[in-house]
Each structure stands twice: as structure tokens, then as C-alpha cells.
Image 1 (cartoon, rainbow, N blue to C red):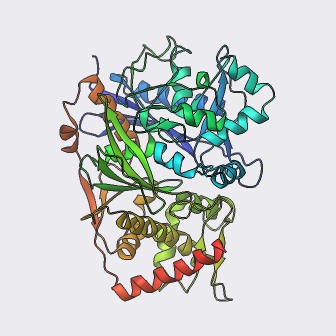
Image 2: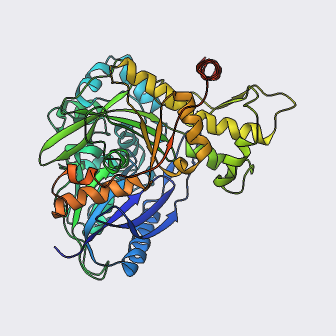
Image 3: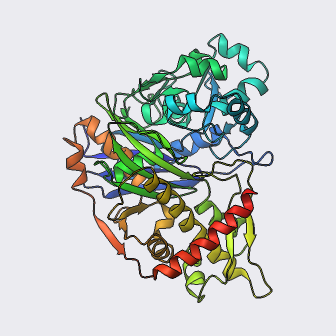
Length: 490
């Protein structure tokens, strides 16, 4: 196979990027486009799939012009975000419904009240929450005129963003997803590794609508002639958080990473057995290679970097996110100010879609700086929530937390994270670990890497953040956070 590098398509919640990686994990070329957010109603979030497709083509063409000797493509994507499109034309029937969207909350409450929660968790590892894809599919089928009838006739196709991009890249030849993305739908039996007829019946979703589920590393087809200078094989598809786990070389049970992007996602490798959380975390497919599944325990925070985006775009407190570190460092403390950024509800371990954001501890002395700092601190407190839930589920205490994502570049946040967790935090040299993980999986399929052990040798640490805060102060600050969250949940 030609090429000593891999093209990773990283289609995220707020941006679309393409990165060409060499076999050492170094970046040869990169390009990015911001993705506009659409907010049709309270708690509703949508994306324009055509805008996503245009951005994917643009960034891929840009990096291939700089470094075109790639062996193939790996795709990683925002998970749970759901699209339905016409099989004949490839055109979406509606905007994509984003993972943050809460319009399925009523259906989730109904199914929970009817007693279906334990079945859903047993089969899928997930909880009944509008975060996942199934209720988004139901809404589209019930609210787009003619959608259900057309779906039952086999005229429509559905999937998460990876499936939609694969369909477009292959000219409509391949309708597939991988096991990591399938495991986020509320429709996939993670033990049998197949769509569940029982859950499809429960949600009223036609089987014909759904993609074929393949390994994370697989032959997903070849790009349509004319898209790029030459046809390229698609060799991997993997959900963004699982991709980050690969990029962070979390290949052994107990290894843990936390990604700070739009949201925050803590994921711990749980090996080849699927644990069931008793503390409102979710079990997910970490990766499936050569038919063998590695599972993971995961905690999901809906708002992390999005809170900084809110400070910039909605409040005008900052011009760019890089300003926040100096602002926070310029204060002697948090002045008792706490922001609970439940803008689209609370994720793990609370799972309360109706909760809304709140700011506590305001006095006349509080200004812009204190609110900026509160937004940064909130990300760290939420991470501690997840780490404590994982410990309660029996996960071993890690020796360090590996971090990545855009917010991991903020030294102040990473130091406060180490302080509030009482745990060393490791930031790698390459923080674009989501894209890197997709490239690594594609490289495995291409035969450029012999094993995950070979991939792990390429992981390099950029900086270690050691906890410096005294335990009493750590606990005092966290108690203030717990009180703030309790008020939001009332």
C-alpha cells in the first residue's frame, strides 16, 4: 500500500479538521473549519450535514495538497449525533440532531417509567437518556413528514456522522458504521455485538434504516473518483472518545484518559469483559479489532470547552480562549463563585436533562475574572465527579490521568485539575489524540503497525502536572461545588 502516512478526518462538535500523521505520530499537515451551531429551541442543538460535508472535503483537499502520500483514511467523529438521508440522492431529510440535544427527554422518562431502563442498560451498557441516538431517530421519524413510511420501505438510511461521511466518500456504495459508534445508539447489544431486535421494537425503528456494523479497523471502501487526486481506502472508523483512548495508548485494563473538547469525557479501559456500572456511568465498546472487543467504562460531561466558548461568544468576556489562563491565575482564589454549566442538562453521574446552568456566590465584588475562573474550575470539579464514580464502581486508582483536547493546552486548568483530583496529570506531546487515534487504527489496518504495543511506544509526555494543593483546601473547594450542583438539581 502506497504512502508512509495516514489522513485522519476528525469531525467534531464545533469544528471539522483533517490531519496527516506520519508513522511516529508527528503532524505533517493540518487544516480546520469551524462548524456553526444551530439552536432551534430550548435544549435543542442541530448541525447542517451539508455544511459538515463541505468542510470535510475542503480540509481533506487542503492537507492532501501539502502531503498527498497517504496510505488511507481514518475517520473519527462526534458520537451520537444522528442523520437520516435519502438513499437515492444522499440528501439529509433534516438537520443532524447533535449529541447535546435534549428533545428526547420526554420519551426517555416515559420508557423509564414503564420499567425499560434495566433492559436497556443490560443490553447496551447505557442509560435511558436523550444524549444517545435512538430518541433522536424517533423524533426524526415522527416529525419529518413521510419519514417513517419511507424508512419502512427502505428508501432512507440513518447513522451517526461517520456513517454519513462514509456514504458520501464512497459515492453511496457503503452504508456502515463501526462497533464504537454503534455502541452509543441505545440500539446495539454490546455483548452479542449486533443490533438488538428487542430494542428496535421498543423504539419503533426499522432495521432497514441502520448501517452494517463492522470492526473499528476494517476495509470500509474506497473514496469516489474525483473527490481527491486519487481514490483512497477508508481503513478505520471510531467514535471520538474511543479514538482518543487509542491516541493516548490506553491499551491495558485500568489505563485512563480524559479529553477536554466541547465536553469532557473520561474513559477507562476495562478489558475484554463489559462491566455494568452501579454509579450511573456507561459501558461502551472501546475498540473492536479483528473481531475482538475491548470495553471501557465512561463518564460524559456535556459542557467543558463549550463553557469557554460561551464566555467568548455570548458574554463577550474574552476575545480568545487563551486569555483565560492569565485571568484565572491573576486571582488569589475563586471568591466562593461556582458556575454549574448545565446548559444542556447534567451528564454523568447525574443524568438530569432538565437541569439548567446556574452561577452561585455572586456579590458586588464579583466581576468578569471570577466568572471566567469559575467556568474553568467547573471542568475540573466535574472530572472529580466522574473519577469518584469510577472508583465506586471498582476501577483501580490510576497512577496518573492522561489528558488531551483543546483545553488541555491551558496550563492553569491542568494544574487545578491535578490539585482538585490529588492526582498527577500527564499531557502528551501530541494533544490531537482523537485524530491520532483514528490514524493509528487505520495504520493497523494498512499494515503500517504490527500491533497496539508498537503504537504505544510512540506515546510521549509533554508535561507532568503534580498536585500541590493541600487536601483540606481541595475538599473545601469541592464541597462548594457539590453544594452548587445540589441546588441545580432541586
